[in-house]
Amino acid sequence: MSLQIQQPFAQSGAGYFMKGFDLIKLKGIKRFVFIPLIINFILFSAAFYLLIEQLDVYMLELQNWLPESLSWLTSTVWIISLLFLLVMFSFVFSSVTNWIAAPFNGLLAEKMEALLTNETPPPGSALDIVKDIPRTLSREWCKFRYYLPRAIGFFILYWILPIIGQILWFLFLAWMMAIQYKDYPFDNHKINFNEMKYALKQRKGLSYSFGITTAVFSMIPIINLVVMPVAICGATALWVDHYRDDFITGNK
Image (cartoon, rainbow, N blue to C red; front, side, top):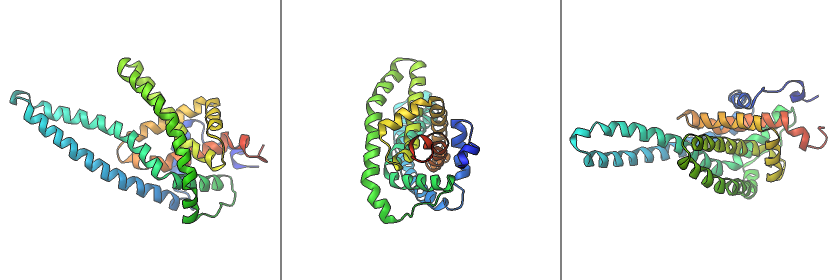
């Protein structure tokens, strides 16, 4: 009897994300976490440095433009601007790094699933990752095509509907977080993108709970560096508990 049938790894979508913090420390997994983590760290450090440097330039221009009596506004605007940029940057940064690290992310989900189901993990090598690049990037492109038109629509609502627009935008981002990370184990088993979306919609509570938690942690500087591997491991545990038996022949 498989482990997930005896006892679920978590009781909610949020619980599965938090479970990811434990799963990334399991023996045999750390080396697959390390590569995406290094990619995250390098890209985040470089992009954040450029972002802060550019912000300082704009703040200097603002300070020169404001009269002396309002110079105190510079510090206030700097803090508000920094907080806003951190939130927006976290989502843009997550999207970019997911594209770059997609082949490694798929491999991490594959190894994690084998570990959680007590199966022999498939052999992995640098050549396997290279061979998988076209397929994984094609899948990322499917996600992007799904995301872009909806993002434009919800972004417009963000500005024209006070409060409601902001809530809808955040819920949309949470849904996209669920799609982004829960898709890796689906894609490893060559499950069609539309089938994956339908499966997620059948358990919307799990998807939104997982996505909201992931989105919140993605907004926190430094912690967002480990969100990607944590979310992948948590999403893989969720796949094992709630989706795998429906798609993998012989487990029903």
